[in-house]
Length: 142
Image (cartoon, rainbow, N blue to C red; front, side, top):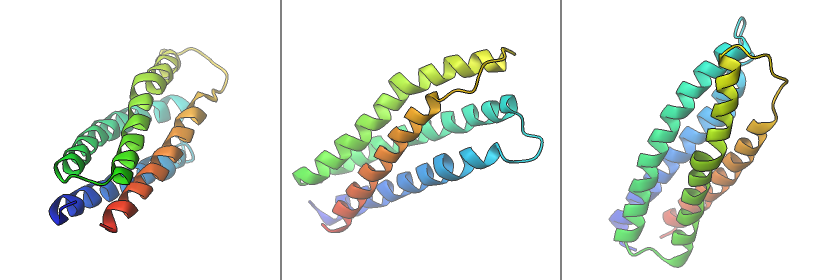
């Protein structure tokens, strides 16, 4: 893999990883612990933040894919890239729509029992962190 493509893909990968760690594992759980933040307010904020994060993730994923493909990356880098992109696609196409339907109901004022649906999203975030870490380390070693 050429040095420019490897450096670009590595930098973008670590930016993506940092954003996921900061938002999903720091901001998201902490907002519900802030004084006077109700579940409805937390959900409203979370939806805005995750919509923005997912949009940026799509741009970063596209940049990584372009750099990996253009740089003629080795198979292990392609595998890690595919894993990270696949996790993102499942989150956006399958998990987020389900979470959004439920949060729509809560935001509309329905009194629903606490949901465990977000735990699946968290599990996929952990998988994405592993894939991005593997990709970043692989690219940095090229």
